[in-house]
Image 1 (cartoon, helix red, strand yellow):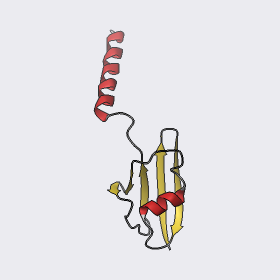
Image 2 (cartoon, rainbow, N blue to C red):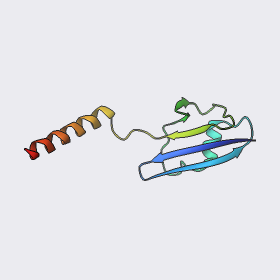
Image 3 (cartoon, rainbow, N blue to C red):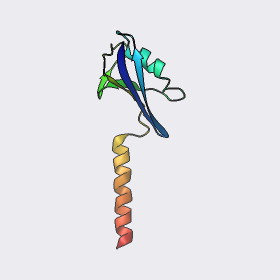
Length: 93
């Protein structure tokens, strides 16, 4: 048996589940076993921050991170923050 930590961070919640699974368990099987994806679209998975496919074999002590799709393009988000910061500066003058 191996011990795997599954982590999901969604906009309205974050959860961590520790599972004991048989050796040779795939990332997709651990994801399904965790039950953390119910009601949330899954964009992918990573083990310790490195992207893995559904067929990745997990090892004892791995941390499987469930990745969600981006809700906004990072460049667009930065542009909006810069505009907001500039508007606040101008109001302060």
